[in-house]
Length: 456
Ligand code: TYD
Ligand code: MG
Image 1: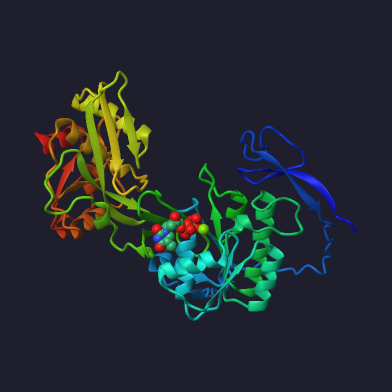
Image 2: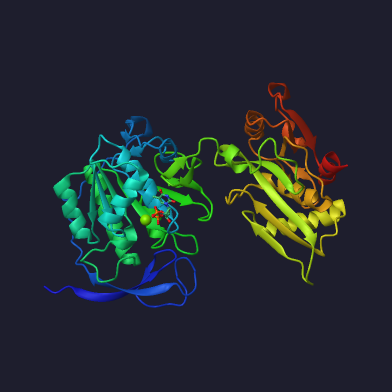
């Protein structure tokens, strides 16, 4: 019987389908995101009640808790982000921009697990390319079988023949099922392929790791559909021009999403960064003091680390002053500049302001307001902030310094890294045992106080 081919319009934002084209997605409200895909209409099998297995609702206290068996990954950072290892039968998605190092991360890890049989499906690179990469990483190990394949049906056959203990699919956007008309990477293909792999993972108890590319808007291409099918979504991010990479957990059915792993991309693949603070500070002990630099303590997930804000304030060479920011929210910087104008009396309207967060990391922590504002003040008056000083604090619209989260952890990290003084919001000190720390703790409640403390 010939299967009927029909058109379905899928939203590239949320994956919702619609029987006809519409200008606006009825599900997520995005404009102009519906694209046509051909799918073969499958006859739905009618299931009678006796065929369907019916489960009995249970009381919470009756439910038995069994610890899921986990496969420990060689990389400690990856293990932590996964919540303690790869859970049997789980479907893990590793997303990231092209070229960020997803394949390297997964290949490097799988090559180091000697005790497991691993099937690595590559739809992007040839076997020779993968061998070259394995050589470069410096680990050639025969527990990993490589198959360059893009057909889902062939992949399932390979799985059957090799009986792997872990399956890697690089990437989900390159594989396609023969049963669906549309091209690889389309919403219906991505959905179908991941659903089939999910079914395999759940039935066999073999964990499957999917690699997925992220589109320009920052969502996983082929997109939200994938996010809710899988058990765990890890995002690998960083600036390609810098060495640092952050592995973040966005969704995890088997662990916390506040965990974070930090890596450095080098000649021989990825290296774990166990002490990020030391790497993110650009200057060392014996360097001379420079103006325009301030050290902040930020939290990524639950991990504190020191990070450097660098600012340059100079007289505008052209009519309109420039504002350029990397690694920090530019709107937030404009707000901080307005606070400086109003509260400290800086005339910044005729000045170019450049701001950079060292290391190429994008930080999203309001506690960086204070270091950013101090770096700008330091550059504007051309006076360096004393060495060994760091700070954390949110700046409010009227120039008040507001509380930040987990202050004790931040102070602890600063102390561990040999900082001498830490400037924190006054209101944060309630309940903090100052005597526990040997670092000097200075409190402020207004931006003006920070100015006087550092530059007067
Ligand atoms: P890759 O893992 O292919 O990225 P993705 O799978 O996310 O597209 O690798 C990305 C980049 O990493 C590539 O441009 C080369 C670089 N790289 C190194 O710098 N050192 C190495 O040892 C390896 C293997 C890759
Ligand atoms: Mg790749």
